[in-house]
Image (cartoon, rainbow, N blue to C red; front, side):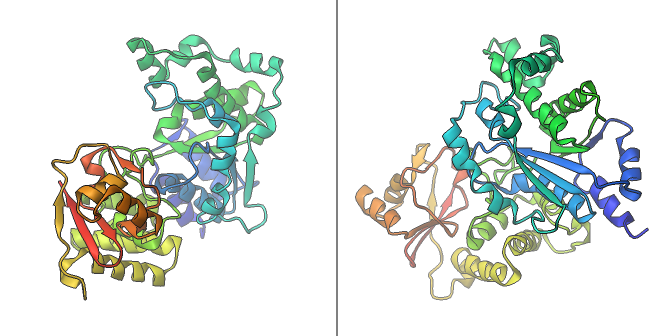
Length: 401
């Protein structure tokens, strides 16, 4: 009886779908009376060096399984990243080199450690899928290819749309779902976690397991976290993200601006707080959300300090020795706009060379986050609107539409 609350949380909190149809009852039975720890798989391809809160959604679910006594199997897709997951893409992903993938992967452990239990024996296995995929012989590859038809592959939504539009589909892209499915075979996954866009890939893994005379895994899909723009899924390439390793002030400043309609989903997917229990107004809920998430990745004291600093910078009524933050309209700015040029046209720097110098000296911040790349560019007005641009300790501008 003691485990029942954990089971409810695992199977229902922030879960979009569990499949096949029998999975909920079967998982309930296994979680209630486990004959052995479940092996819970999550694959992450290191296509970029940093993890963000979108990744935290599935990592949080994996931690729930760990806390209930089960084994998390984190697969770093250093081999599959070189193929590129076609999911959600209207064209072929650029192929990464082995060196690019290795560079991106090297920070993943420290970032995942912020969420997963790395210390309790038996609770975590970390694998690189190059361990087995880089050594596959042709006979195994042929066997994998023979497990699916071209028609089945084209039923995948992304391939189907590209085929209809006449956008090229390359043969190596068909290997991606087969390779990541083969990961499930090799690590004997009982459950595979993924975002809602990963259902096809997870089903391929389940099918391959049965073809290799192993029990088919259950699939658990988590919602895709909508980014700070309020429209598209969180992504670093869209600049609508909050990184797991961002400084507390930067993290807080971004999160307290989460659109009102998304605040409850952020609470559900990223915290242990039921948003229905919060009676505060919309603005206070935003601040509570920001404080809670920063506390999770740092500590309550640093979260409170970030809150005080954000209020000093952004809220004109609490700027202490700062004057009210002036505004700068982005309406006449041509996008994409690089950082060094933005500093010049806003008047915070006298020239491009002055902007370069201020950036190099570490004096430039956006919402408290230090900016180090003069050529960092924002592609849309929405990616900059309502953010605070700072040079030094006394120059601030609130960027507006």
